Image (cartoon, rainbow, N blue to C red; front, side, top):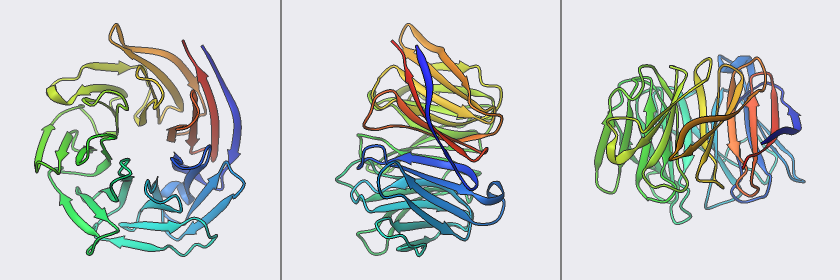
Length: 314
């Protein structure tokens, strides 16, 4: 097993989110916020290829997502309750479009990973999840309700159209099926606020959640009443969880403890922490695996640094 930091990029402000491009090798989009997102402007940076881009926004930006069907577009979640769409092939801070329907901050955005769909998800502090389609009028297609507090993250299933997982400050995990108009839930998936969720890229029924109880839980949505495994070892709240897109048996997590952890999820060792790296002393909000190159991932923290890492394990 080997871990190393290959490169570092210094930011102007604290990193809130980052994503690798599904279109260009090694292109990374980063959002950082002045005053740790409490008030002030934000910066969007695209690094990793020959066209370095920097865009400014007047409010906090909490998340970013590439548009699967158009490599020139990105979507951002804004603190003013809007979803902001930018065209990234021109260096202008004027957005292409601003979608305003949420009543409070938007905490996450996620574009459908199916190239046949133009659907965008947004999750908000107003307790709702909204579905958008930029090819239709009106752009807002549906509002999903049920959560009783802040929705921190909502994610499309990577292969099953219409299936959405969401997590909230109300401690619940919800699975929405927009094709069947169904909604199943575990009302107490963790005994604390749940901050992050991610679907397995290989097993259709598996997802993982990370929460303020310092634990990750692995779930099979066919038996959502109890977790398949519980992952312990973080020293503070877990802010981001990500399955490895290149390996069925591995995931990574980061949190408010400044740790980056790697976990083995094979049937015989379903909750084994295979490596821990203390990245910094600040909160780590940004985490994503490189979609084109195995064993590579990016970590972005409130110490105003993005680290490009490599981790190889048997």
